[in-house]
Length: 151
Image (cartoon, rainbow, N blue to C red):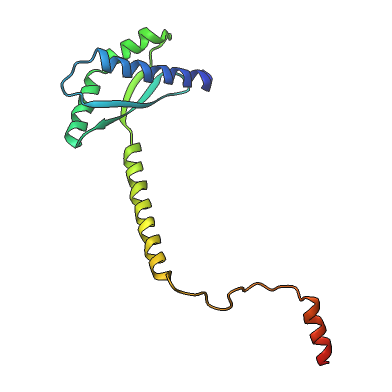
């Protein structure tokens, strides 16, 4: 079993090789604007998962996924040639969920901003319940003298 550092280095190299090969050698018309975002290799260096995003609608994403599947053999042979490992890992292409997660987070942040604005509007001109300064303060010498005079 290989160490994690070697697997990370191989994953980084696979990411670069796949991206360059898609850019230079693969001329499939179904392949849209694909970005290779990440690659991960198992500990035994036998399987590599390549994450990608596609700019466009669902139809373009499906066409790009089909193009990547059909180009898998060319990409694997190029990875084997450029990395020089004894066993070239099998490639699996997975659409990256990062853009969807980012969009969801942006929507949640927009909701939070609008709710903060609503609270700010409602609280304009309002005062706090109770005293303006609710904290206890130590008594001063003047207050102690007044207390002694009344006794």
